[in-house]
Length: 121
Image (cartoon, rainbow, N blue to C red; front, side, top):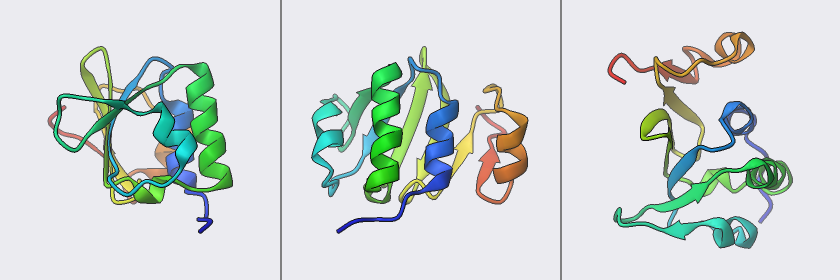
């Protein structure tokens, strides 16, 4: 079944560094293109997606064509061991690190209604 794209999720993907790692909890994801990109981890219930330019563009394209974000229960995004974002419940909302420099357009569009800034990390 084709799902409507999640603009918030696409915007998050667009501002992520190309070398970020995404730990994804999505036991019912059906998108075979995305499933093939996921790697097993030592973390129970999570798979890893390591971004590069191609994978980032492919994920944005797939979300635009046939949303897979709705199947993601939780997605933790890190770079160099530093947590940048955590997305929840179909990537509908999330928390961003106070250390991650996000563009002003993103702040004005999403903070604080859809995305909060963490006080802790």
